[in-house]
Picture: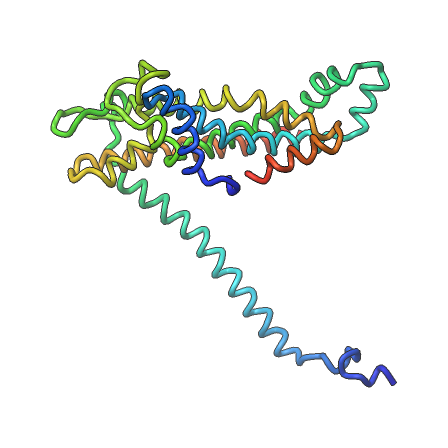
Length: 171
Length: 123
């Protein structure tokens, strides 16, 4: 996401969702992350579908399939792993975004029960808050713990997608 | 006649073998240096996070919600679930239109192509 800095996305969602609704909410955070994720997934989808040989498309059309059926049943199926990779990498990329969540989901000490109408706890803001706005050593330590957890999760998603993608290609 | 022109005559540009070997070594050293810089930097980040964070993580840390300072057994479970919800919500909102938008351009006319290339400016 080099076109629009993620802070600006957060600010935008703050203006169009948080201010009219009168409350920070997890839903607004989801909208902000969705805006960041959208071009990433669209771009990988485009590339992955472009890798499907055009002859495959033509064969399906020659057999009398409609264009919609060709795209959904043949092309999208052939590129299925690529699409999943794109989605997972988009998720991994987006799950560490902090700036948009500061404007939208914020943070709370309670369980995320009111997703649409209450500030929702989340990892990146927890790390930021504990590391910068707290004078207590105990909270610094908790921030490091949270940082380790989120690092491991993102790393695992990346490794997982890489392995799945590679084995399918080798077959 | 033109062959004698120093700008077009390749023979005059030949360097000694020693110089070329020396240059090869220099470039190789530079690439090795750059790779260690990048890989080492990432390893350093990972090691810092692991060394600071590994002592904190236990069962309570993963299953209790965060609490204000001073109350024992504070954890990150609510933040974990919150992040999960927010990220999944983002996926639900963005994946269907993104896939649809990605399917459209290869089969379509110029306006759609320029629209998607505008969107992909943001990746």
